[in-house]
Amino acid sequence: MADLRRLGKRGSYRLGRLGIPAPPRAGPPAPHYPSWTQRRRGPVTAWILACLAAVAVIAAGAAAGWWFLPFAAGLAAGIAARYGRWRLRVTVPATAAVAAAGWGIPLAWAAWHGTAVMAIARILAALAGLPAHATTGIAVTLSVAVIQALAGLWLGRALAPRPPRN
Image (cartoon, rainbow, N blue to C red; front, side, top):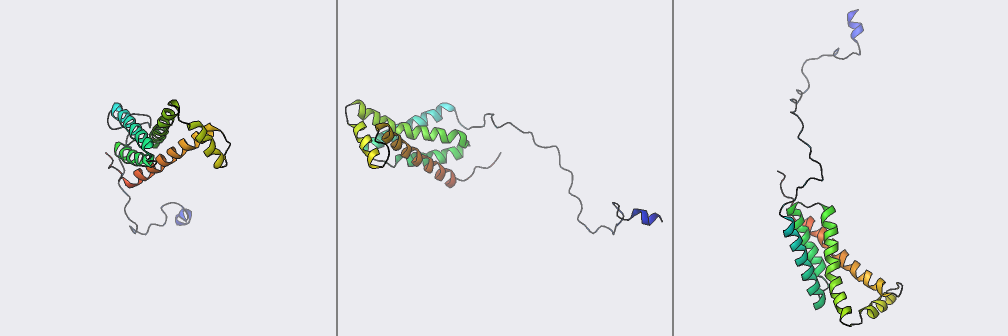
């Protein structure tokens, strides 16, 4: 009768050691560090100087007619951000600001010195089928620079190998 009471209970069907041995117990879990702690590599002043240099390069290129330089700056930023272990929540706004400033400075400089930037922006906005306002044309122009830079950032992060974890 004792055997009938054990049916369906745990351990009642022992057939020997047919299974694999249980894995050894793991040690204590690794310490968890919050995501807002500083983990970046390199001093902040070096990164700020790099951003200012990128703005200067994009601005000089925009003045020379090299419209593709925001993409090249975004590509360099993506590679540097991968090796510097910067998160996307830091690199995306920084890259967007660098690209917008890089194209905005030559536009503002030309408008300040009497070039018909506002009239050209208004005409281009109207030709694009947008409201015929100068701010719309300039906003679209700066948006194109930001999109180029973000596409370069994405490609740079995709091409750079992931650094080994410590």
